Image (cartoon, rainbow, N blue to C red; front, side, top):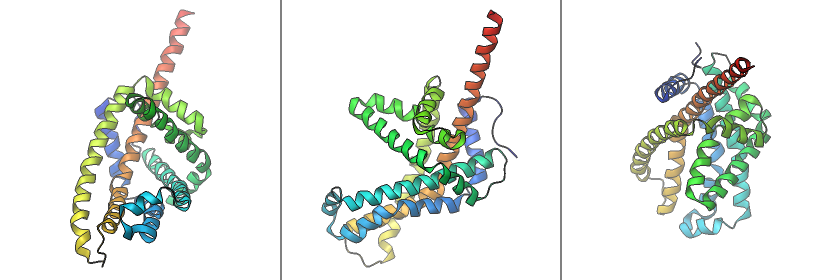
Length: 265
């Protein structure tokens, strides 16, 4: 049964759609989420193997290591491929269509180049906003948040996806920000709960390390795995629900404008 709404919703309705989609997908998309943890782990593994024993000083030195940054770039590409598959799989669940995980990842691979370019432009835009003032940073963060959906669901190019997200969100910026804020609070509660459990358990595993920094890296990797399994499906569901709602609002506004123009004529 389709979860996608057929009419615009209030903030509570968007959140309800988010939880419905999350509930329907979390037990299905876990292989993708686990793959996402693998895709995002190479930088931490490299830091652990090459310089973990030296502590924070090694981490600072790693910032000037070109191999480390190359690994980060490869990890980013792999992570975006997996995230794209997660979006496509959850979207198919939301509209009531059958799609295998392999098909979702295959669809994401076809859109990988514009997806990665969009993310790099997104990061650049946020960096510029942060340099200017903190307020432009938050405005851009919210207004560009649907860019991934536009790349994957509408085959938009990188720039077109960013500008399209801004157009979708701008008339409903505060509503979008409110939904994202509630989602952020939920994610933070889960994060601190998971981090607390991992922080207590990791030193008790008896892995033979005597370096606090190594345990911090291992703990961070474990937290990342659990967060991907629990939170990544929720984040994707929330942004898909927002995309559906804002598209309906935009289409309704366009229809009202056309009717008004016909009446005026």
